[in-house]
Length: 107
Image 1 (tube, rainbow, N blue to C red):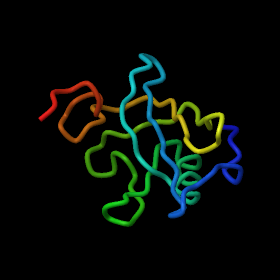
Image 2: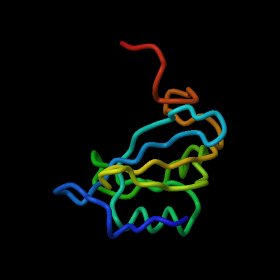
Image 3: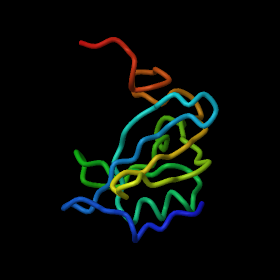
Image 4: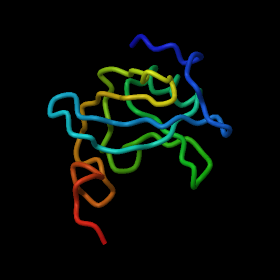
């Protein structure tokens, strides 16, 4: 994966949005946030690692559920303030059991 993590524009909390998209179907699966350290870990593991804003700590997607997001590629957008992760999901992505966090029923 060729992405210059130091060239990214992190927000005031050191975070950057990461969009996970299925590499095969192109379906958008979820939006999470990462920091420099979790992006390095993602590259090393080959699985998406986020930074949970609510818990204030790193979060390896699938660590509890087994529904990992295996990374095919990471790419920054034109402004360097968002990352697109093309992934191969291992099971459903959403905590509700849906393949995607988008497109489900709204409450």
